Image (cartoon, rainbow, N blue to C red; front, side, top):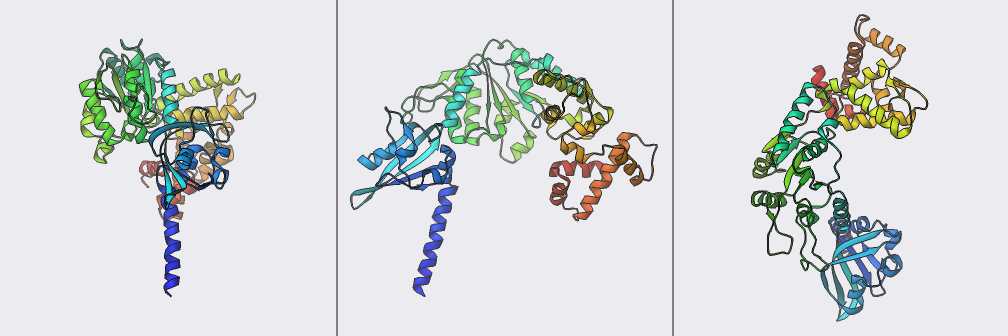
Amino acid sequence: MTMERDEIAKIDMNKLYKTLLDEIDVGIHVINEKGKTIVYNKKMMEIESMTSEDVLDKNLLDVFTFSEKENSTLVQALKTGKITRRAKQTYFNNKGKEITTINDTFPIKDNGEITAAVEIAKDVTQLERMIKENVLRKGNTKFTFDQIIGESEAMLSIIEEAKRATRTSSSVLIVGDTGTGKELFAQSIHNGSHRSSGPFISQNCAAIPDSLMEGLLFGTKKGAFTGAVDRPGLFEQANGGTLLLDEINSLDPALQAKLLRVIQEKSIRRVGDMTDKEIDVRIIATINEDPIDAINQNRLRRDLYYRLSVVSLFIPPLSDRKEDIWLLINHFINKYNTLFQMNVKTISKEAKEVLYQHDWPGNVRELEHAIEGTMNMIMDEEVIDVQDLPISFRRRYPKHDDDLEKVAMDTGNKTDMTLHDKMEEAEKTYVLQILQKNDHNISHAAKMLGISRQSLQYRVRKFGL
């Protein structure tokens, strides 16, 4: 009985260790005394773009390539017992992909003999790439206010407010749903200001891990960690110009505190450095949710919000400015006519009505993708019709005469209704049917309808269901 309990405990512990190895956010790579891989966790697979079958039970040097000037820290640990801490290493996987990591490496000993070596790695490949990309993007802005499309009152008002912000260097917070064009406004403000000849650097705060963001923003000092070099961060690269921090609510609170200090004191300190450097950078930040909600849910520091929102711009969603849809449709048709060498002149009245019916949760970006997708499917047509639209639109809205006759029957033969009203009534009826079929379970009904929970909740409120 005791032996059985011990075996069960052993099995459970093995499962526990495997789960822990795969769940931690660092790469783990272990080789045995022959240099063959015996442990290779999920994070390490992600870092090196490899599978366990590519690496396990194979000699490390048969799988990965290291430059002549740089040997594997893992092999060094196995052969010489060398321990390395925070060492930067660049190497290549078996497909030739370049990988850069910061490693802690050490040997495993049994009775004084080295029997294995362990490497704990953090990925900085993305950091290296983004630094290069941001250097290339210096000053590479193409949007001005003249290129922002919209004649609705809501859009004209926000454009006028943004133009006023070009006169100073105060911080700007741009609030808007995903796809509303926040970066267009940021670039337009930069290009309309006296900083237009300076660099414009853009960084999405959700794009890379928090552990790498500090070095990316503030730069590094040689010696900060093994392999670290003197490298300017985004603030130094943007000196004399504008730094756009996209999705500021994704930034770690500790880094938000450091960012607040930089804005207040107009100076930065590189990671590992002891001295501060003065900077002259205008900060524009964007957020894709209500700032008050972000503050209440601890995604945005209150003091940073007050510092950033000297000028606040609230970009309206496309659903609040549907009078601009026709302008945008024509703009995107012309754009993809040029790109695809096509000659589409317009869309039919019925197709236009379908597009106007949609609530556009993805905003202008979703509309552009819909037009691009449509023009990928048609051949020599000069007019886009309902059947040419992406399947998600064709399935969601009535589109043929027989459908409209059915709508008339379902709505009590109200033949005097406009097409818009008939389609809306049909939508309401169908949504109600699906809700009732699913006992008003929003998640199940949304899945059956092929829309998001948010889109269904919008319709429930709109139709009073």
